[in-house]
Length: 229
Length: 229
Image 1: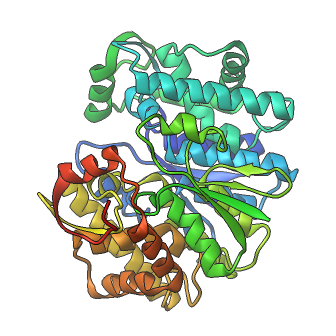
Image 2: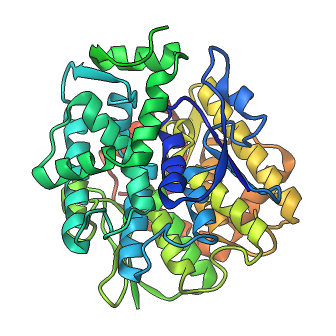
């Protein structure tokens, strides 16, 4: 049996990726949630994760898998459907997920995930515009090449899981995408697993000053659907 | 037959990772080198890489694999030895490589790879010190747990390839590590494939102003072994 350690649903884009993958694929797991605190998260999270970061997967045999993309590959060795079965689609899906894992720093820094709010950005910087254009092109390429409705074909895979936080960001920040990419983001948001995550995020009353400040630095909050604290 | 697109050996840490893996494992490939230019690299590199970034692997059947970690997994499906054969070591190695792929931003930004120079840093920021401490702990854990001399056991794997640029950075910036980690960095630098890469880097006369400025911003160049331009 797996135990998946995650942080706040509202903020933790990295936690969402393996969580939504396991949920969408029906891989059973226990969840352990630890909230971002006022102190050092790295220290607190080191109790269960060697890097001091979330997510972290513990397997029943004692194996600890402490990175989101490594968790995906660990699961792919044990469960069908994590990656597409066809080799070309699988290579493409891995590139897409890995590009998200290591890149898009402007999108990540300028539009931090905060599922429960809507934000009007102060500006659309050239770096952010470039990241959004690349997301648009990448999604468009996958949908066209593999036929949709998911990025690498007709089944939800780890590539989709890696862009799940971007769907929340598109919604929160009103990011403008071409029609196929916007429709794909809407499809992700409509998945039952994404609805379950969002409901959990909205119910959370744990706020973390650093994440709130990151949002305040880039835009104005125009709507906050989260539970009152 | 594979074709691997890389950029300047002196600067491109991402290019080094799959290159040194393929060289160390004896996987044959043709190399196509494109130098960082004064204009938009993203535009120039888009001619062969969908993300506009290096490295990018082209397989003979037309498959294009445009991310370093996805290249590793693509090769792992086709060649033995990319990852350790034993499951626990493989899970650990994937975590280590993926942590490097997505993290260590202070190390990457403060100590940009420039193989052919030695630099005295203006300061050791807390964020950089934390990244170095994490590298030290991670390397120490792997070496102790799997018995060395490489990170996940007795054979060079993709985990080592992912930290190859860190070995050059340790050398260039005189980063201080505990004895086992320092010895491991020295072992990486002593590999024939690393020597071949470094010789190529030193012979390059192509300089790129942005990369040179990044180094100048963080420290003083105290030695430059690169070919005169």
